[in-house]
Image 1 (cartoon, helix red, strand yellow):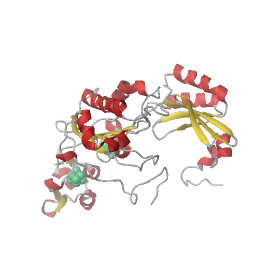
Image 2 (cartoon, helix red, strand yellow; image 1 turned 60 degrees about the vertical axis):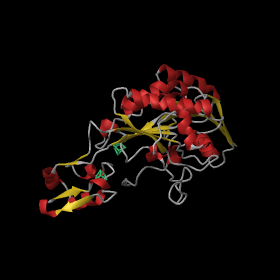
Image 3 (cartoon, protein in one colour; image 1 turned 45 degrees about the vertical axis):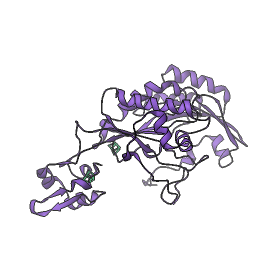
Image 4 (cartoon, rainbow, N blue to C red; image 1 turned 120 degrees about the horizontal axis):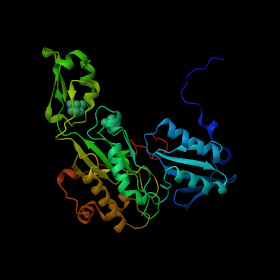
Length: 351
Ligand code: SF4
Ligand code: SF4
């Protein structure tokens, strides 16, 4: 029979037997130690050993982790949405050997419970065309600095950090506890020759979310209404003649307080607290220091069990700026509240 490409195969086929047997019937879960989860259902327990991975993995590295899964987990592992790897087994006696093997191979065990989960990021200079900064390089520098929080469970609650290298935010930056966002700050520099030769002009005009791009039929090109431009870079996606990169002015912003979880309080978007930090490779010290400072202020002041945003909502945003010493300006006032009608409220989208 001919094979037809109808998208990915049904994932149920690949679940470990213990998950198939407990599917829809899970009773509770525990955190026996940092990096290990125990999910219990009527058919028994599933142990998950979570490790951090470098997000951009070679085929050889993927083969290495598959070998661990073959040896201890009947071939079962999964990559989480925050770039962790979880090795899955119903056999408690395999947990320690998996941990030892992962650590031998340089994969740190952690990221569960009240810890820092692996940092998610977008593509940055490695691949994408509109980044205002790198992504993996900044995340490496931040994760090196905060690594103590990955393999321990000493935070008030879980900590999700995300990095998106432009306002398109194709990562999870819009609703993470701490979000680092690459920002452009100048209007695109137009190369009219490239626009004329290489651009479908109606698509270029239509792509602008603020209607800042106007057709210029006389010159067979376009013009930009500068005061309408929000420097998103979307037009550079449509035309090589709309240069958005600006080494002198591009930089980073930090947003805090978002979460996707429905536990205790509604999901919420992250909000801007630091509008600009310099783009300073290779170790981005200003950004690393700012993120550590926010984490430390939260650790020192939050109640046990409070996510970063929950703590700020309890004490008030004014007090957050006062306690943290982060300069406040009227540009940071953001009264946009989560809307149940337009955003998802669980791990499944709700329309
Ligand atoms: Fe590209 Fe923007 Fe996504 Fe970065 S956040 S990978 S620049 S679309
Ligand atoms: Fe429009 Fe964004 Fe291009 Fe500005 S950068 S002109 S807002 S598409």
